[in-house]
Length: 185
Image (spheres, rainbow, N blue to C red):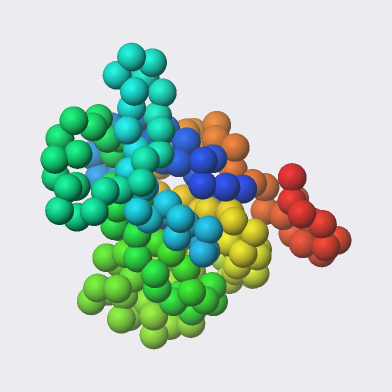
């Protein structure tokens, strides 16, 4: 299946993009996240929706013994599942990263052995051009997060349209900021 990957300045922007993809409710359209150490703080968090206001709040995950009881009363969004399965892996060309969703399985499972063996093959499989690897690495270092969406070809138009409406970072802007040594906007 094809994969489209976009960069976001922070976790919140990436999760808004994930929610928009999930709102499509199309079969086999699967978002995943990829980032650096900044994602570690989100690993043990869950998202709860206030029943009165509908506002989403990040809550520290309780100890495993109490997690089941606490989760029963919580209305948890699907994007919280991406964080629950957060794994830390090394991707050739990007280095150590945190990944959630289908990426964890793809990069650590049987297919992961093949991906990890080809230095930039893993990047291509994620929809990342080899020449952009340094942009991703630097964005992750600065707390940015990538959203990779795997989808059946039949849904390409819908996925592209949703991702075009998100506040993804422009790769040319990121490249100029990196070359100038300034933080991206």
